Image (cartoon, rainbow, N blue to C red; front, side, top):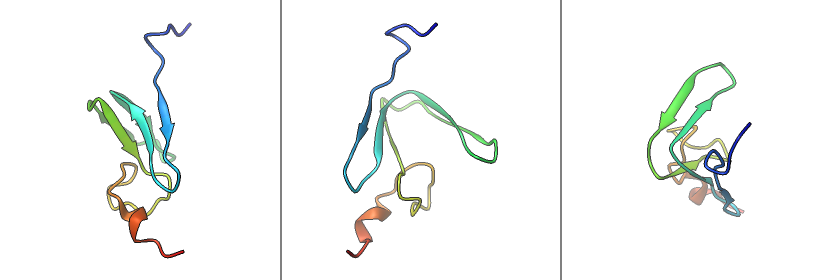
Length: 64
């Protein structure tokens, strides 16, 4: 059973990434496991990032 220490805060940035308190381990749809030991990890929500699943701010070049 998860404890409060196991919980991670996720902040949704409108038009931007998901900010996840780290460290994190993510399993991608193809089964690849990626890890980051940073204290905050920016996870790409738009899939434009060249560093997917991590955000590289490619969403900023989007025209509306």
